[in-house]
Structure formats: C-alpha cells, structure tokens
Image (cartoon, rainbow, N blue to C red; front, side, top):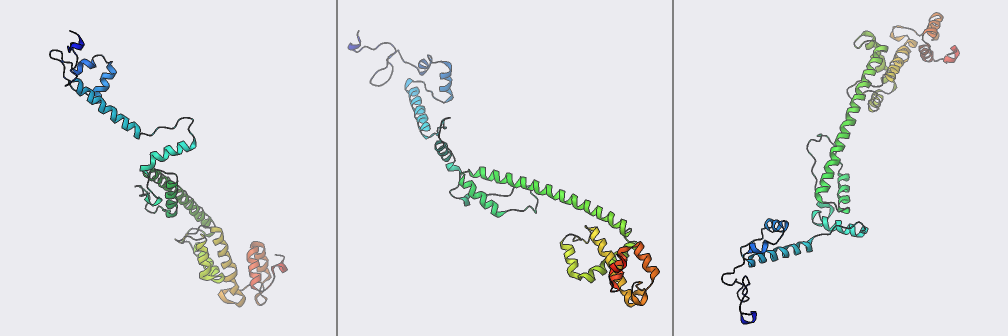
Length: 296
C-alpha cells in the first residue's frame, strides 16, 4: 500500500492528532538516543524531559525562548578595540541599578574598632560622596572605599600619636637630666632655691602673662613639667643675679652690691668678675653702671 493510499510507515506520527500509529509509538528516549553525551547531559541538567516527543519538544522550545530573552537583556563586554565611549557606556549600564540617583544617596557608617577620639572630616566625606557619584561608583563599592580610608587614617593617627608620645617622654627625660645637672636633685635645697629664682624672674618680667606664654609655647607643659630646661635655667639665673641681688643696691635682702657706690668692695668685685662674669654684669647694671666700664 502506498503513502497516497493513506497507509502509514511503521513509527510515523499521525498528522491529525499527533499520536503514534497503533503498534509503532515513538518515545522521547528514542529521539535522544542519537544525541551525543554532552547534549543529553545538557538536556537533563536543564530539566527538559518528558516521555513523548511532544513533551520533549515543548521543553526545548521553552528553554530556547528563555535563552533568547536572556541574551536580549544581557550586556556585551566591550572588545579589545572598543572606544572610550563604548567602555563608558558599558560601565554606565552595568552600574546603573547599583548607584544612587544623587550624591546624598551614598550612606556611610564608621567601621568598628576605630579610636573613640578619631577625627571625622565631614567635608571630606561630602567630597567623597560627590566624587563617587561623578565616577558612577556602586553604593557598596563607595562604602567599602570609605571604610578603607577611615581604617588607614586611624592607623596613621595612632602611629603619629605613639611617635609623639615617645618624643614627649624622651624630651621629659632629657629635661629632667639637664635640670638635675644644673639645679641638683628635685627636692634638694639647691633645686628649691632655683625654682624660687625662676619664679622671681617670671614675676618681675611679665608675671601671669609671661607664665601663660611659657605654657602656650610648650616650655612648661599642662602638667607643669619643664620641656625646655635651658630657658628655665636661664630665667632662674636672672632671678638669682638680677632681681634678687638688685635689692643689695638699697641694702635690702641682707646683702650689699659690691659695685654700688655706697657699698663698693674692690675685692668682691674682682672675685665676681673672675668667677662669674654674667653675675658681675647683672650686679653692675643693678648699680646703675655700664659693664663695659669694667671691660665686661
């Protein structure tokens, strides 16, 4: 019997209802048997199956349409010969949904573990928001960079703080050694006397205003510790040789100025000029005379 007479070959499908002719049903597994292993694995991995050819075909069509839609929405990577405009357009499309509409949309929080007194520059943060928006940075990337900046700034601040503390401690140790070499041990009569001379000089030369400047400039720290000993020693000598012994001119303080006319003593003058020229100059000035007269 020929095809024109309506007979069907074994294994053919009926054109009217899509069902296999009686005794010759075709299974989906029969259609897959001719495929290579990778293709069959791909079909299984994507959940495409069914027992009849129609079910298999329906699954393949559905998967093909899904992939077509996905390809239509995908972003193609710029090629090696892409222009700057193409690269910028690609980046803009990739980050479009990941960045806020304006700079104020970038939100940051201080990372954990920062020092409590860590300075936070609000102007810098606002500038970073503007830069992030200009460069079209995703919000998460901008926040991560913000945290990196703060953590590194904290390490730098802590490093400088430790260096400053170390320098301060070394300065105090050196100052203490210098004072002890010149004034004697703290608490000794010599040390206390030099402190008194220093106070006399400060009071005579400027009082509270001078003391305020000495502290503001760091010569004396907020804890009344001396950091510039040579200046303090010099002031104590001024207090000893000038403001204390100036009273000798008038006969006050239990002593007399050997350079004053009313208490002149050539022997004392020569001894002081020989042993302590600076003291001699101060006493000469206190007596109202010119040290150059004495070749000083």
